[in-house]
Image 1: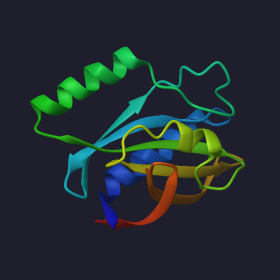
Image 2: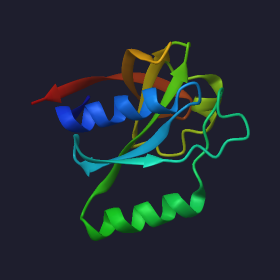
Image 3: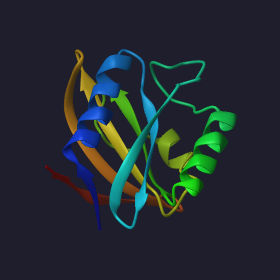
Length: 135
């Protein structure tokens, strides 16, 4: 089980995480199969953006419609953890509503990306996926 990124998309996701620090970043990964083709940076609308993320449902719906028009699927959701491991928190697991999606977590410490990991989360079960980055 793997997710594949072009280097420019992978860097865009990392840069978004650093730019938003000390708040958590979040976004949608669109693609087909296991290949990421587009990154949508989302606004973190959480009341506590330093410890959790929340995406505006209206903004999500708009992006899902755009993805459909472009023939893309929801490949994954990414967000950052600030000074915490790149591993799903209890809240992340509870909010994992897309069993086919990859959940990519970016650890940011002191405005620097320290770790990026991907997971599938189904019915509370966490399974790690491999991340491939291509030129």
